Length: 320
Ligand SMILES: Cc1cc2nc3c(=O)[nH]c(=O)nc-3n(C[C@H](O)[C@H](O)[C@H](O)COP(=O)(O)O)c2cc1C
Image 1: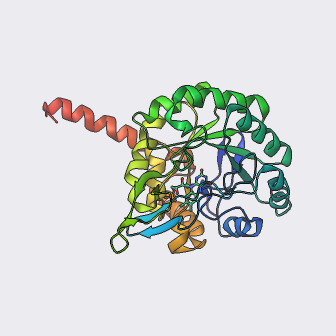
Image 2 (image 1 turned 90 degrees about the horizontal axis):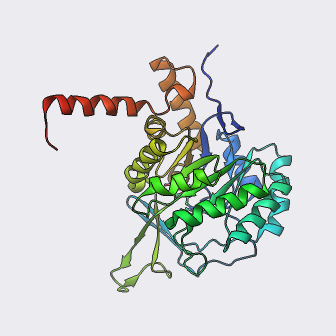
C-alpha cells in the first residue's frame, strides 16, 4: 500500500489532492464540473458569478493560438440568485466546490460572497483580476488598497476560506498579495490571464470583438510561475498556482516555486478532463521516486536551491 498522501489543506478547505480546474474555462454546469472531479481533480472551481445576470461580450470571444488561448468573455453569467441552485446541485453530487465570484463595488463583492456562503459553497475565490471588465471597478487587482478593502468586506460576510485571485498585469504582484493578506485572505490564487491581443491579417482588424483579451495556456506559464515564486515569498498564507499547467511536471514546478495547489484550465481544451487524473498520477509517481510522503514536503523547495545558488554567485564574485 502506498504511504503517500496527496491531500492538502487550504485554510480548512480539505482537498484529496492539490489540483482544481481554473475558473471559467469549463463554465459552471454541475454535471460538467462533476466530470472534472470524477476525472481526478481534488475540488472544482465554478465560473465567476456576479451580482446580476450578464451577457458578456459579443463573439468572437475566444481564439486558440499556438501557445494557448486568448479570451475576452466579459464574465457572462446568470447572476448569483440563479446560481445558488447550481451550488446546491454540486453539493448533492458530493463535489467539493470553490465558488468564484466578482462584483462591481465593495458592497456587491460582499453581497455575492454572503449569498454563495448561504448556498453551501465550501470556499470562495474572489476574482480580483479579470482583465476584460474595464467598465466596472476596473481591474481590482491593479490597486492594492482596493484589494485590501474588498477582501476585508468579503471576510466580514463569510466564515468560508477566501482565496483572492490576482493578476499578472501589475508591476508588483507582491504588494497586491500582501494587501489581500492584510484584508484577511486565506490564500492567494496566482494568477489570472495575461493581457494580450491578436490581429487577423486578412480582415486587418483585431480578432476579438473586445480587441484585447486574456492569454492563457502554456505561453503564460513562466510568467505565472514567477508570480507564484514572488507571492510565496511575500505572504504567510498558502498560494494556489494557476497558468499553463498541462503536465504533471508543470504542477511539480508550481509546488517547488511555493504553490500548495494548482488550478488547470486551458489544458482541458487540448487534453480533455483526463488531464486532472494524469497530473495527479504523475505527481504521485514523482513523490514516490523522490521519497516524499506528503505534498507539503515539496512546497517551496526550489527557494532553498535558489538561496544556495545566490550564495555561490556571491562567493565567486560573479556580476550579473
Ligand atoms: C475561456 C476562459 C474563461 C475564463 N473565465 C474565468 C472566470 O470566469 N473567472 C476567473 O477568475 N478566471 C477565468 N479565466 C482565467 C482562468 O481561470 C485561468 O486563470 C487562466 O486561464 C490561466 O490558467 P490556464 O493557463 O490553466 O488556463 C478564464 C479563462 C478562459 C480561457
